[in-house]
Image (tube, rainbow, N blue to C red; front, side, top):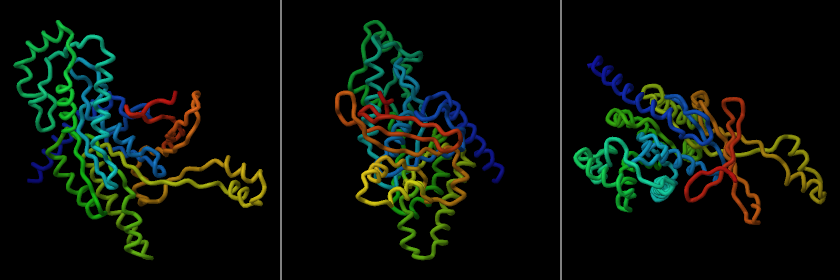
Length: 346
């Protein structure tokens, strides 16, 4: 029985390695130059309102979209994603909108609708997370020829059906307590055994229940730390045994350097002090919402910040900054958020 279990596990890792091979070819991370290795843990840390959930949604959309559809390049991967929502921040409407904008943008940028080799997808046949229906080969010749000759674009119903088929690869799990999160992490082992197309897991947010545990245990901080260790152990098993790439968000904060604090302790009526306070640079740091073991598992860490600036037209723009603090060297990317998702700062 043990040998059979090892064989099944090896087959699962082999199937998941094929998924990772496609992941490495896709440009999923707008902040990184290359895709993280299997078993990698990427952390997004920042204050509330710094687009941590929005980043995960954009990454998830890039993962569940295929590389192309009906000849239109979508730049996706076609991988399954598990999204663990601990703060009720996940929006299915936002995910649908991002998918719709990505697909319609690709269609509008193409003059003629070429047909992908193998025929047109039959979206009404999609089931069980597959992107290709069972009857696609039967209709590929007629529909493919008609679209190629007349340059027909997909109808609204076809686009909606295709988007729904993509969403079938997005598995959302909501947790409302630390116990539910722990049970979810353990139960994922059996779930992943039946879903070998899943290569990515996302947790938003890892620190959701930290203060609830601190309040429950009172002054017994060691018990709260033990809870974090138990969660980290379950997460480590998923990383090592199933070679998942895991993204997680964590609430962070900012602090002032000692020199800046001393400058702000001057006379409150001094204009230079007020100016120094306004111009004081914040030093980002990740609040200790996890065990030391979790810190050792992190392969990449990004600190997200939000600021406002005036555009050339005089309008106020919200600019986000993602700073990679680990590994070195430190790198910074600026981006904006629109209805279409993340975009470069103009």
